[in-house]
Image 1: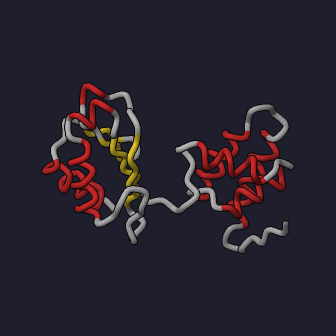
Image 2: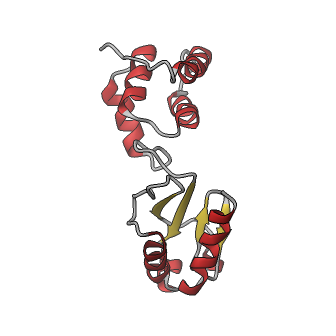
Amino acid sequence: MEITIDKNEIENYQKLDEIILKYKDKNGMLIYILKKAQDIFGYLPIKVQSYISEKMDIPISTINGVVSFYSLFSQEPTGKYTIGVCLGTACYVKGASDILEAIKEELGLDVGETTHNKMFTLKATRCIGACGLAPVITINDDVYGRLSPSDIPSIIHKYTKNS
């Protein structure tokens, strides 16, 4: 399959080539290579998956199977900030669904969607291991706990004012 690379993407594909060359002959490195590719491109569209497939001589079905299985990979562009709402048992019992609804209302999007300005992506997550702080959300690497729906606007504002 012929993969056409836009001239604006050449630098990204060169970075990806370096990673593939360094790790492709080492066992068990596919997930690492995919993670690095996502770091470079921001997500893993089928075009990037096909490129990795061709360069590593791995069937595209295998590449796509890994990408679609693991939640750390995204096949769609994501926002600058990914909001994860924990829906594990402790968080759910303590009102995580109300937190999720408040975020959906505040940002005007649903789970799995990204705001039009590419600022926020909303995800529902499983337990993140902060049960004592339930209900919990994460925004990239930041963790917010013991939340109520009324906390959401000020938390979101903190990220919009800094961007």
